[in-house]
Length: 566
Image 1 (tube, rainbow, N blue to C red):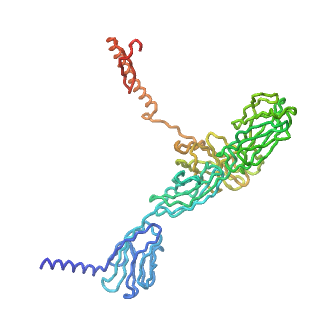
Image 2: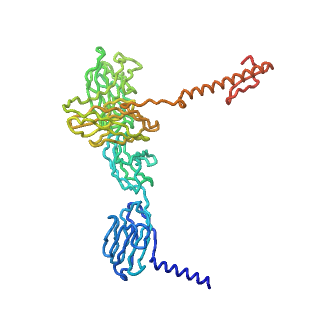
Image 3: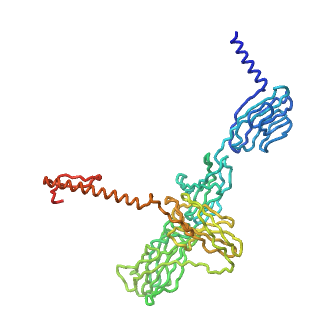
């Protein structure tokens, strides 16, 4: 009976506690950062009528709400901690569910809802545990800002970071015709980036581009995929297999093939044919004559007419695209036939493989009209010499910010804008062994831009310089940076900056390492000599035979040859 009474007493105590504390329920709600969190709480408004209620962060105390975030009188909200806390339900039906707009990680925790029901210990209490999980960033929306022959600049706007700061961006690029498995990937560890420039594209080639944002949780879904086609450029290779054949005393047939496919840099529109006669007495050429033909096939032919008889002619051919003219191909000089000579004795003249000089023409049966001479091809590029009276800006000063795998970041400043405000900048780059010539690999920047991130498609060592522009003139070149990207290591050599020389510590000095090596090798040689001498004397006493070789770092011998023959 005592045991039974004890059990009933425990039950009664529990019921009394619940009666005194009021009814308390609990649940868990999980949302992701940036979404709305809805914490459910309601009462029977038809039975009780409209009642006051409050929400607080933390467990519900004996009265009111701890760390109160919102309170209602049953008709409207009378106080709230932030505009993000709302009652979106129907208050007239007793729905006092709390909505937290754009939930953040710090919103996680226990929330308490208290409905004030008249009477002692009648309040309805409800606990909700809110878990707000961070997620990867939202996908980016990218667009091409500028597409040139060998460069493209893409940009994007900041996106929701998923509740954790963005730490890096990943840029993928591939040839349009290949799968994404062949992509080149670059990670840029600069969360402030909103644009990036890719250089060393192939002219006239079509690429696919995409970008990902990364935070500590993970990587976003892919951005939209850009399809961009680099602009055409002038051909980089000369026409191939050029041959000259004299047809008559006034005509020469010229044949050739287009430049190598990968050097055309676009659709070939035609060819410039330049020819002139050579005076062997004065040993000089006369004025150029010009002819333009369309590009029609893989084996081109043109006949030069109205030429002088028994006269040597030199010919240059250049392929051209819509963007410009390429380097010249040339063949040895070719002579027209004599007026009294049969055309059956025409001798072909074959183009040289070099783009800068031709091999003298040779024939199995030389004739008096054939002269052996080296003919040099050269392409002369015109540059504007117009003078501008305005004062140009001062040259920018550029500094390297960071080198990361196949990308680098730099920034610049300028001391004087000249006669008018800066209108923009352009960056030139080239291979370290190349020269600054007419072929400008340039990237343009706006007047208010002062830093840039560049992705190298073909990591190597480059020279970089910059110019500033205003409405009157262009500045002189800035200082030149020499930057190495890729597997060669993140080396950087800023030519304008004096670098402190490295001084090795005594313990790490290379000379100490060399001394240690020499001592070890010397001991090994001395030990080997002693062992060898001892074995020779021992065997000589026995008048035996000996063959010695060195294997696995030891001196070995066998009886195979006479000792005096060693």
